[in-house]
Length: 415
Image 1 (spheres, helix red, strand yellow):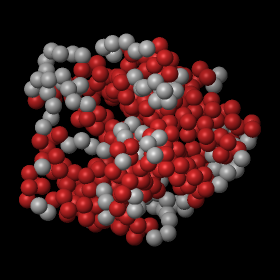
Image 2: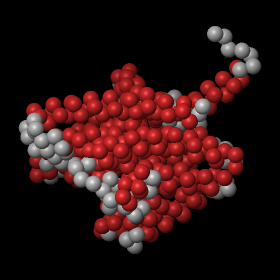
Image 3: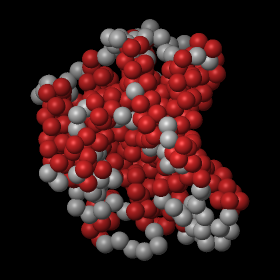
Image 4: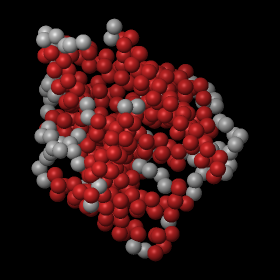
């Protein structure tokens, strides 16, 4: 059916808005980060996928799940910043909250209920209520069977803080600097929770700053994107930027490595989080080529320091991150020959971004269910079979949540 002349401007406006706020390459980054989180939880939480077997040697490599969450924070801030380039008006606030609620809460509540269902024991009423209302981590803990939900509480806080920040047209750089300083000071003084919120919001605002200040498009470079993906996998073992930020002396404080919140040490990863979003968003900036090269080569110092001794080569857990780093360098410096292959990799990954939130939320309740199944367990074979079944169930569940359940909820609330 032909589009009438009267509707053409509306269609054009919607297409322009979609092209401004949706990027398939960013979806590839989002999907890859979600996969890393799943991989991380399989290794980090031993005996959950297979109650009587854990991978050893080279297969015991634990990918950077926490870094992936930091990427999510910066990416989330970037997307919100792109969608809301203009300050929120009073009439916009209700719609802004409604859209965030529809996107986040329906899938969230399904996974929370599933987590409670597969839990081997019961939780207190306060814990259940706090998790259902997304106020977990403030006082009661996160339901363990929904372990990744700790970040959703922070995400909701960031969404709400953005409202007065945008409405009153506050300076993003100044606010990010203030929250970053407060966060560092709070963590150093052992106020870990409040410091984690403040520092996390500073990370999130850095994404907003990118959206507002780095808008000049550049042709996408798929080999550079693939190179950065390999770099992500190596950063946890070979990141040295913490030395150059001059805050290494604070790392003796155990609060800077408190798991579950944003940490002072995470500042070493912030340049990479920002670089990843800019590269996958295909945005240009001053000295782009030189900054990419410097940040790519910087881990080489730690690479050499950790591997130049012969005894270090016997640490099999370093084999995969070392290979990932070498692959990152190879793809980057031979990128002209790898354009076609890299484009296919990114295009494949972009489809995972469409159901990455569902995957992020559903994978831990599913692995908690596997932990309760004692039979067919205890060998490399059982682990492999369980892994294949786990991957299949995570894919089916997350695809259903994102492609069937979420659209139904959206239609219900937008009638």
